[in-house]
Length: 98
Image (cartoon, rainbow, N blue to C red; front, side, top):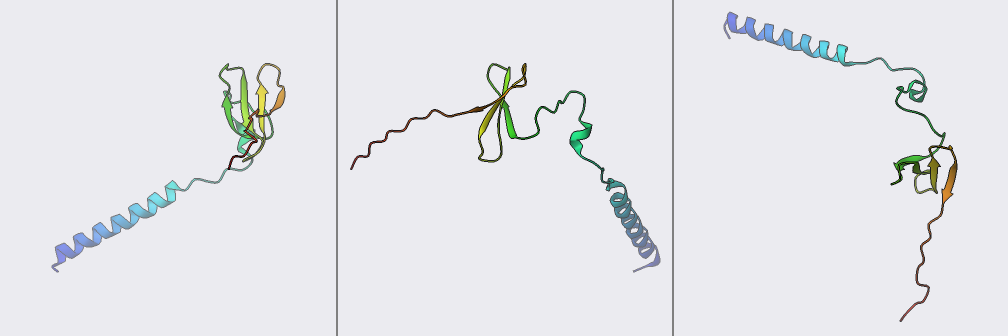
């Protein structure tokens, strides 16, 4: 290769390496300390200390959630803060036919 092309390739390689290093340095965020639930935004309220997969009831006054994955179903009433377990009332035919 001639000297100008060699010089140009060297400059491009150096800038590429500098760009990659700068991107890696500035994209690393410091790890935050503490529990994220301790610094919630003002529009989010921590209601209870257990449960997952919450969903609003159709009336908009209660929230239904699971105690854990494949766990019991509970209902949280917003106005009173009352938590009640829900039971499914499903009836299956108990007769067996051959």
